[in-house]
Image (cartoon, rainbow, N blue to C red):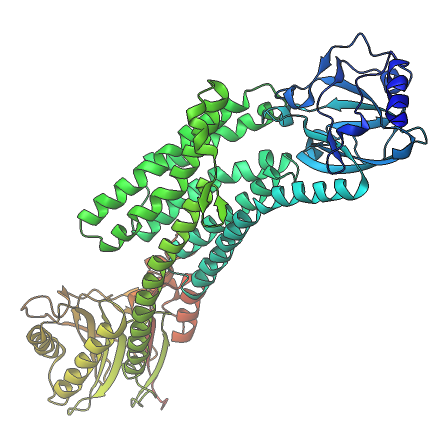
Length: 634
């Protein structure tokens, strides 16, 4: 009783002191200090002094300060707890980087007014208050930059005084409450990032499937944005991470979702969608103005919500249209594609309408959704459902594509094995002639072939051809043609007769493919008899031989004409496939007939190497035959 009476005497004898807590007010070692603060706008270092007279300042409650404005403010409060409580703790839950604390005129270590890039949402700090008399003058110097005030945040959530043990328990409780709300969201978004890495790994194994690339980047962008935004919401990271990283990523992952959707459905983006993708980046120009407080954050959030709405609504509509047109896999994405952009739109809409117009009913869109013991943000729940749904979809897509790739690889191996038989393993000798050949297959199996066949009358038949198409079918057609060719050549047929009969064989097969083919009969006297079925004309000593062209083999019943040419000893005959003429460089320029004719005087290997170095697109086949000069035997 004597101590209480002494305390009241001290309070009455100090007219400049603000209302101070009595010892009887302590509950469990804690007392809230939200009321009885003196407040003043502006900034003056003298206001930190213990002896400063603040009685003219209006009284306020720190819990009722309302959303902070980007201005300097001071708050002061006098506390007398008595000498028996000379060692107490002060717990402040306030914006990190928005205040400085002075106790009895001395600035406390820790809190500082930070730059715009260092300010964070309210967190807890504990300060030791030591005075033999148990009297403390607390002064708070505050300033919140525009990027903090744009969130409509308070400077302080609570200010509590208490004994060390009780304050530490209170701090841990507040910190746990703040951190517990973060953990489920962080876990979900780390799962999204992991899913993104899986998507990129799938793209690495199936690089032709670009949907894996866009899905991986999309999931990484969403997960990274939220892994920055959520800790920022909890005061773990500064608010600047949302302005400059997390928020811009929203537009990036909206674009990536569009690219993924069209790639998944094997559809091409039209000009309207390209313009929309470009428009999605336009709000980024507003961020510096929002950061400096020159543009309303609420209006910016509303713009963000509106501009991503087409992605939320139109992508499912397009998927439905493609599904109805026969793209069954597009139907798998209709529901999952609706979730990410739509939940983000609703969240932004709720924040904007609640802040701008005071429509409290829209604030429900900002509230977490209870899921068992945890509470999840609407966007987290939408992203989690999307992840599981898209994981299911992509598993079946990957399985199907893997089976197709395995089947294709088997066919490709078989086609390569067959293709080795389309060209002679070793060139046969031709009496009185020197033969050279160069064959450079493209990466994909094609259908170039050539054969050199002896005739019963002592002449030689040189045949070069190119089967339409690629892969196993082309190789099989080429094998069929060579089998028929060898059988017919043994009958001593003329080139035109050989091509006509070979054409009938292919028409009888009816596989839908065709073959260009050039057949040249060469006598020892240097007489060339040519028949051409849609193939490139040969060259003699760099000049194109004018021969009568005919239809490629396998298209229609037809007869083939012959052309006879005499070559002299030492002359060079050059036959080649269209892989030489159609070689294309990185600029899209063709090797062309002019370069081909110029090089046609050179050996086969040199011609083929030149075309390959220019830019090979197709199989390259070159044969050269040089008639031996008089007195020379090859």
